[in-house]
Image (cartoon, rainbow, N blue to C red):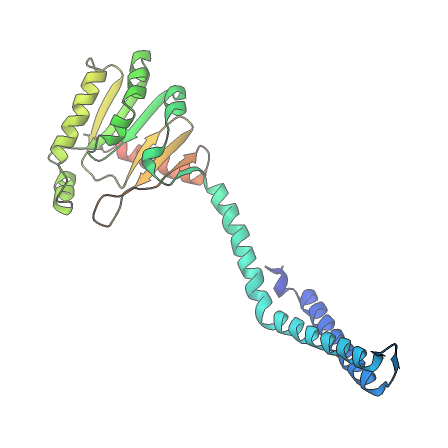
Length: 249
């Protein structure tokens, strides 16, 4: 089976036949037009017939040029776009925000039975959702927060790579927020891991919110996206989060 229409021999044969017929018909009309010397109502039939023939000849040449040099690239681009869109849709990405700070978690914070939040040391994501977390705590819903472990090599790496990073203050801020929301520790659990998180996340029952970090220096807006349950991306992140939790100390 051929992968694309431009590779099918039947398509190639028909296209070549069409180009040849157009070119041949054009040549015939050019010759016929030059052989006719007939005018009626100031219409030069010979010249007009030659003009039509020249047009058909040019069309035939363009058809041949398109089939020979352009069509493969044309079909390849269309195929790439179609397959790319299909694969992207099937991958599991179901929501995208150009600025991860603008996402609204309200619907999923309310509906999710279990919730897991993963950050390195910054409490900004938690602070942005503080009211939602307070509501979950009042209802007794379980929330797990994953951060790096104080004094671990992960902390040393972050502080060595980012001169502005103050890991201890960030971790303390998270502790203070959690103690303010759940002083008895019945609903919110903090787990520390000795590794740098490659991305921040919020895992709900049916989807996971992902925000990747940056490689370049400086602070800037970062995009974020949702992946839906039962898809390749969701399976990947679900397993990765499970393994991350397994490293908690």
